[in-house]
Length: 169
Image (cartoon, rainbow, N blue to C red; front, side, top):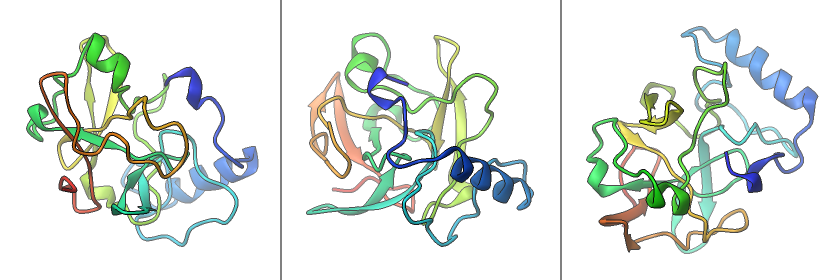
C-alpha cells in the first residue's frame, strides 16, 4: 500500500476486529464480512477491503476501505494476471494485501464469489475481482473521486469496476 493509505478513515481497532470475527464466522476461509451485510456506520474496514461505493457522476463502483475508487486495466483482460508493473504500478498502485493476509475484507455490495488474488512479479499479493486485478489511481486524492475513469495510460485504458465485475463506461 502506498504511504497515502496508512490508516482507514474513522476506523477503530474494535471495528476491524469485529469485521474479522464476522468474516471468520461466515466460512469459506475469507476474512471479512459477508457480501450484502449492512454497512457499519463510522467505521470502514482496512484499505484492502472491497465494497461498493456511490461515486457522483459515475454510480456504484468498487472501492477500498477508504472509499477510494478501484480500477481495472483493460490489457489485463480479466484473466487474473497483472500487466501493470514498474512505472505503470507507480501511477496505478495495485490493491495489495499485507504480509500474512490471504484475502481482503469483503464489504457491503461486493460479491465474495468474485473476489480473488493474484501473485505479482514483485511477489506481492494483489486483489482481483471477477478476474480483474484491482488498482488505485494516484490522481484520486480523496474518497469518492473517479479521475482515473476512462484514462488511456500505460498502454491501455482504465475503468472503474462495478459490483458485477464489469468496467464502468
